[in-house]
Length: 188
Image (cartoon, rainbow, N blue to C red; front, top):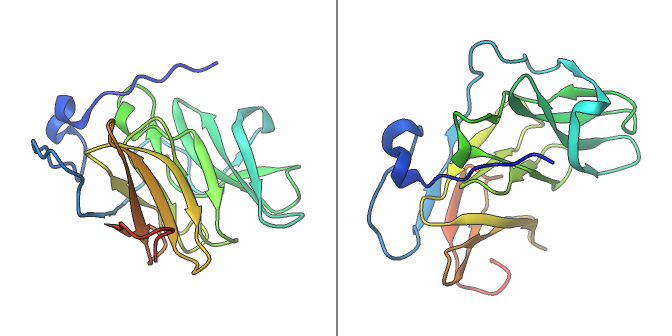
C-alpha cells in the first residue's frame, strides 16, 4: 500500500502554483482552479498504460467508458477506457508528482458523465475536467482537505472540505473551474 505524506500549503508556501498562504481562520469564500499543464518528462495524454498501474477505484459511466487513476513513472495520471477496462490510456497531464507535490495528491476519482471527471483525496486539491480530459484544472483548498465530491440533482459538482473542526460545502457550476462556499443543503 502506498503511503502519502500530506504537507500543509503553509509549509510549502509559494512552491505550490496558485497557493496563497494566509492565516485565515474561516473557509475560503471561493476557489478558482488553474489550468494543469504537462510537466517535462511525463507521459503525454493518450499514452497506453498497463492495467497493473491502475490503482484505487474504477468509475464507469456506462458499460464501456470508465475512469481511474494510474500510478506510473513517479506520477499519478487520470486514465480512461473505452472498452470496459481491457485497455487504459492517460486522459490528461500528470496530476501529482510523487514526493515533490504532496499537497496535490489525489487518490479518489469520480465522474459526472463522459466529459466531467474529478480527482481528489489526501491532498488539498480537486482536479477536474469538463471536456473529456482535454483540459484539467486544479483547485487548491488552502483551508482544508476535500473528502468527497458528488454531482447534485442540478448537475453541479458539490465538494465537502474538512476544515478540522467543521466540514464546508463548496459548489461548482462550471465543471470544477471555480468553487464557491455554499451553506444551502445539497448545494443549489
